[in-house]
Length: 162
Image (tube, rainbow, N blue to C red; front, side):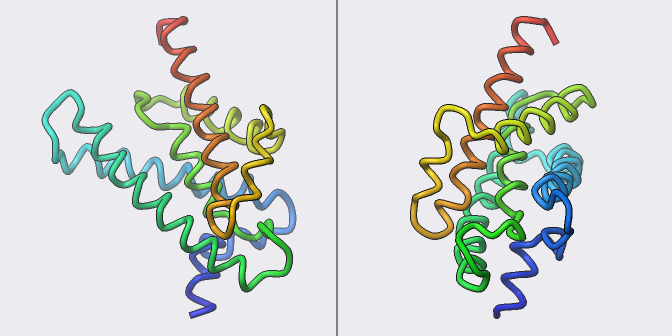
């Protein structure tokens, strides 16, 4: 089971890259986001205009929930707390950053930059929520960074008419 959880937590080993594993993990988040956008357009469970967002929200909830469980298990296998090899939290955080935004390369690029900036700098004392136990602590700062990035993107979208 150890190999299974570390494979998922490191997103297929991407977390083992020696330079910027969190950024590489976010890159996997971009790929998953692109797949989610394609899939959510194919399988419309809910009526328009909310279909795409609700499909995305369901999948996002599953990924973040699984991320809490998987990162908590991985944390038991790695030395130290919130080992940089665990990157499933970056995937979940990035997907939160992109929630309920229209698909465009502008939002994709800005979402990536904002999420990574907030994840690295941890403004507003985000680092304090990392003290939550297990997988919650690993995922919490990335969830918060994703929410902040999403709020900035949504505000930009409204104010700039994007």
